[in-house]
Length: 286
Ligand code: C2E
Ligand code: MG
Ligand code: MG
Ligand code: MG
Image 1 (cartoon, helix red, strand yellow):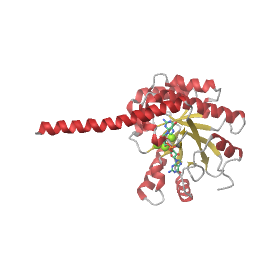
Image 2 (cartoon, helix red, strand yellow):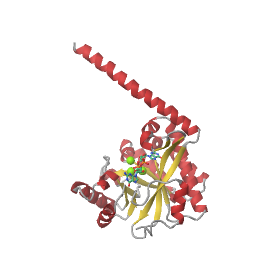
Image 3 (tube, protein in one colour):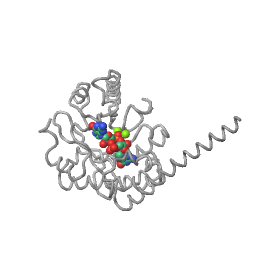
């Protein structure tokens, strides 16, 4: 009886997995086609300094320009992409596209090469690829950009899995001038002793804490703690997902000076991003 139930359980589980797996395969093969048909895009979300409201950088965010379904955000496909081998080719494409964008902004003098930084999200498997360092440096060289203009966003998950390898790779890139930030900070499990060993320049306060920071005392406390950690580790800080003036004012009062969020701009295509840079940022609106 017990054995039979167990078998049924397994059979049911296998069936459920098959449905999920076949759907996953369908998305994966669509993604492969999208990649070879040049349907992937990078959009850019400005990062803004308090006070001057100038754009000091941006985050590159992946989009899928689907011929029938329109523009699709990464939440619909990023898990499948990151778990398939396509992430390696797509990851190299993302890095190359980001460097190409930086090169164009510099050529047209839309940004200052000494201060501007474009950040690119790096998936764990992409980071762990044996040639990751070579891929990053290759993209930088191919487009002849200053290394300091590129920043890589990694998550706490990457750090925990293989701390010594992670640190070696980061240090190698850091020696060439590539910057690092920790994305979604506060949602993972990295310990402070790990964190202080990492060559990280910037912590990104996760938007889940920003969302209710003016109404939820716990989130406000977490933000204060993250700001204290960044300051004691001499790391810069940026808050993501800032949507309201109240959030902006709260975060600034706590000591955060850099912001990314709909309050300033959603992620936009390169053309619009260039227009924003040309108009001098958000000084008029805020
Ligand atoms: P993330 O790196 O934490 O990116 C921030 C997400 O917050 C973006 O969602 C952005 O559009 C959204 N966002 C920005 N400001 C606001 C705001 O004020 N309010 C709200 N509610 N949301 C805001 P998006 O573009 O859908 O990307 C989702 C996630 O997909 C990213 O989270 C990142 O983990 C992943 N992703 C995006 N592009 C890439 C990529 O090129 N490579 C890899 N490996 N992952 C990527
Ligand atoms: Mg990010
Ligand atoms: Mg994030
Ligand atoms: Mg995220």
